[in-house]
Image 1 (cartoon, one colour):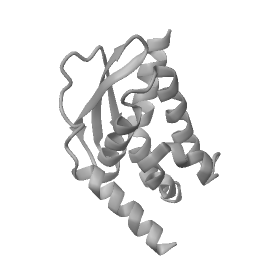
Image 2 (tube, helix red, strand yellow):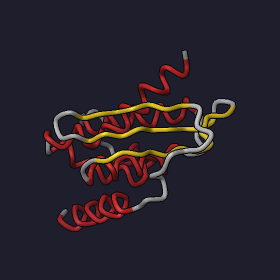
Image 3 (cartoon, helix red, strand yellow):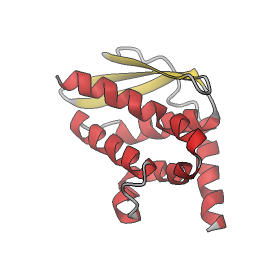
Image 4 (cartoon, one colour):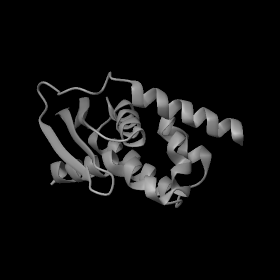
Length: 145
């Protein structure tokens, strides 16, 4: 199990350092601000949604490694997906964090986001991990109305 934890830590560090998705998004038609007052994480998610498909997405802001890595992982996951599919993946991620879904086969489609699975063991970090996902969910649900 220790090796898996190390692997997950490496994935989180890698995504925290990755700047590919961290920039203002030109042409974004969706923008949502998310803030976690308990530790100061602050992000703005932007997406370019065309015909119900997330063509591109990016984020700006600052926060701890977990919140930044989680935002980066999420953006990698949702690019190219329909709004409906992205929402389904967001809900699956949140269910994983709440331990409502624990079957790795079901979680496989979360790709690198599965690295955040064990965050549920650290209640103080859960808000960091879910910030981007809740922010996206709020924005997409509003978009669908």
